[in-house]
Length: 457
Ligand SMILES: *Cc1c(COP(=O)(O)O)cnc(C)c1O
Image (cartoon, rainbow, N blue to C red; front, side, top):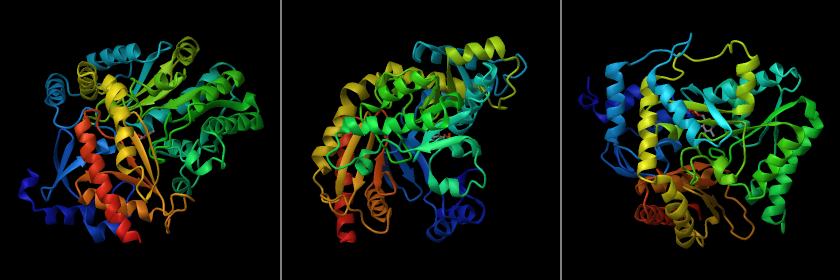
């Protein structure tokens, strides 16, 4: 049955009556009606009214190769026809997860050679949490169990992933977090640096918060530190260059495992396959999902470093954990084709050498001096724009979060899909964006800011 037989109003009515949405105020949604996206091509999505919208969020940080990739459709179709599903439990496998695991081991940092598949970033982080605690138990140190995370972290939405995350509003609705997870300050200089404190010093101070937490808990009780290389859903918070090397030093010093959540940063967004390579650090686990299939299929891959994998294999016996769709053959087929596109088209080099730096320059030149803009920051194809009432004092508009949502609404109206997190505007476009696409986006952001400035004053 085709949706074409239904009017937009009919679909909105069905949606409002029966569809509970993720991260949505349902009363709001029902009053306003949902925006129905019906198709997409290249960097654009199209809604049911026929509007063409440049998608500066790559869906939800995932459509790295852009929309309308026939190759990915063909890979899925061929696999569906040959073998739509078989599991990877009980000593079985199928060809595509085997090939994909091998491929991932080759693009991952040298000391990472094993992969555990799931269907989402949340699941992969659940696996990662089990695995690091299991590792220490197998090493005869079960008391080494606490995980240090950070405020504003986003690690997904299952109970374990929410517990790992540092979103206050999500914790309020958790009604019982997974125990032994502690949160420290995040490296968010725009709000947390002291007046006159250098970027470098602030980065070291934010890393010191992790060290202090380890010392306070007792290093013998701390299993791991988990962090996104760049905090995504928390508002594209980019740490100073001093932060990650210092975190690595601290983890090494106290023998604390380093868990990197690269669900957003993985597969090219920072100008390397993984941000671990951009930041030159050596994590014990790397959580990946989103860009792995460019969102064409749900798939996550937890990359597991040799240290943990060796213990699991040599001492672990059976690992009582896995998902029906771990290593789903269709999702893995799409991932293989997607990695092939990223490689063949040189998308990662393009981000590192060309579009990444250009995004920073173009945003700074185009809106850096706008009266509503307190800061523009970018890394690869990730950008955060701070919306302020006063550029000098960095005072915000009231109530918190309102101003950025006004900018966002004008942006979408003007043909640019972007998101607002509190008072930060964020961009995470497909890696296929060119300088031209970036120029168009910057023009539309500037127009949205001008309109918002009128509304807000
Ligand atoms: C999106 C995201 C997740 C969760 O992934 P899901 O597929 O939505 O479960 C985890 N970590 C980070 C950094 C993310 O951005």
